[in-house]
Length: 143
Image 1 (cartoon, one colour):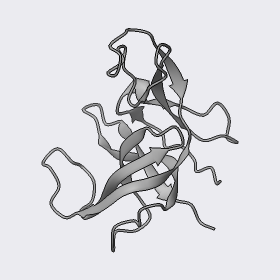
Image 2 (spheres, rainbow, N blue to C red):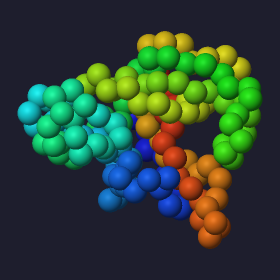
Image 3 (tube, helix red, strand yellow):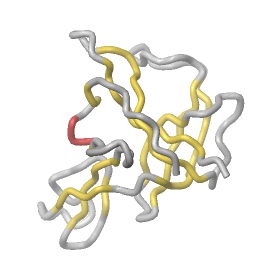
Image 4 (cartoon, rainbow, N blue to C red):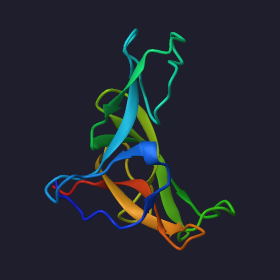
């Protein structure tokens, strides 16, 4: 795995990410795990959607996964600040949780299902104070 530098800015949501503490590690997504039934969620949630208990705990999710679904978006919603077209999909992590995400590294065609990908953070637009807004993306791993 390669570790790309994390851009300066503010996360789209503070509870989405664990920022790296050193240059040797990359960012991680933060999810929730129900201590009653074991179900895992992203983003974090205080209540389990499977057993309805309020017994979730924060957990660091895997940085790698496989593409579960993929498409190319040619007409973006009005609130989207990035370039069009862009790849969009879901990444399945090793614990089965699906992460909705942009997929980076080419937009000529959808990323093939089953492609191994790695988490990256990137700047996508600016907030009202001029700070970069940091969002999660996944990039195909190179062999």
